[in-house]
Image 1 (cartoon, protein in one colour):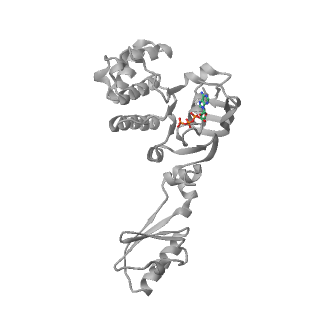
Image 2 (image 1 turned 60 degrees about the vertical axis):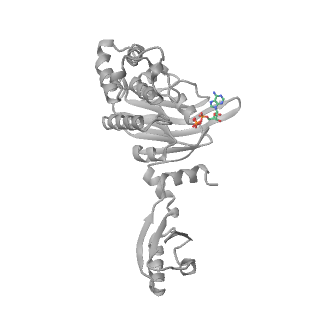
Image 3 (image 1 turned 90 degrees about the horizontal axis):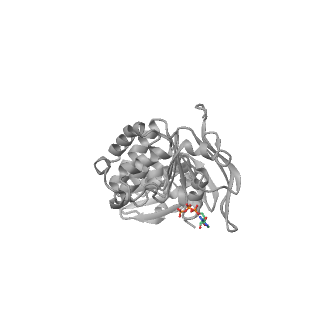
Length: 312
Ligand SMILES: Nc1ncnc2c1ncn2[C@@H]1O[C@H](COP(=O)(O)OP(=O)(O)OP(=O)(O)O)[C@@H](O)[C@H]1O
């Protein structure tokens, strides 16, 4: 592997068709080395299919993908050696203990067991499973299983980690432990590709997100810039010291929509400065004083709904 590679993942025109139905429709994107890249999209958008092609579980029907410079189709073994995978559905063995599952993973990756003991112990401790290491996975909760699978995926210290909906349906403690270890690994240099439905998680964790809709990429950018692209959805919330009627605010320069929420008015605007100037002038001419005024930015949720058509 070339340590200077700036692209951890390079995807070009990647396609997958199931029984004549297009699941992934010629997508192209790069994941930069060292970043956390989030893949967002509604159910059936093609996220899992993409992850499965990138991790060598299924073969693409068209296009190409490289993992740290290795072509996933032509160099399947090499490209699998440099990744860790937390798949959508858990794959630890129920009849083995947590420790035995980790040692089995060490065997699969060709690690000496003696060399695997230290990282296995550290991972179990970090993920709150050390005391349960000698218990069979059959008795584990969903959160414990998912934490074990993350430990198994990290055992060989891969430079690139794939996670498919890693915290979906997990308890708070498991989610917290998993996100903490992901942040820590990323700070230490691990590139992370994750699919998620959780906007808050994407917002907090991801340097960039790709939004996929019906097998096609709808947008790729940082959460912050995605929010800026729909800044026409900005809003202002304003409260007055006395009742103000809607006609005072409707139709003012810069104000596109007006609605009342309890004691405050919510004003939709594409031009925050103009809207604030209008409100100040309107308050003055109607003898009211402004008690509170705040601007609201769109959330990543709103961006997502707009781009995936969920608000239509
Ligand atoms: N093995 C399969 N055989 C046939 N069709 C499939 C198969 N796997 C996925 N599909 C179809 O391909 C499309 C994309 O599915 P995919 O699982 O990749 O979506 P997703 O974005 O991961 O959704 P989810 O969030 O529900 O997991 C869907 O229409 C799905 O029904």
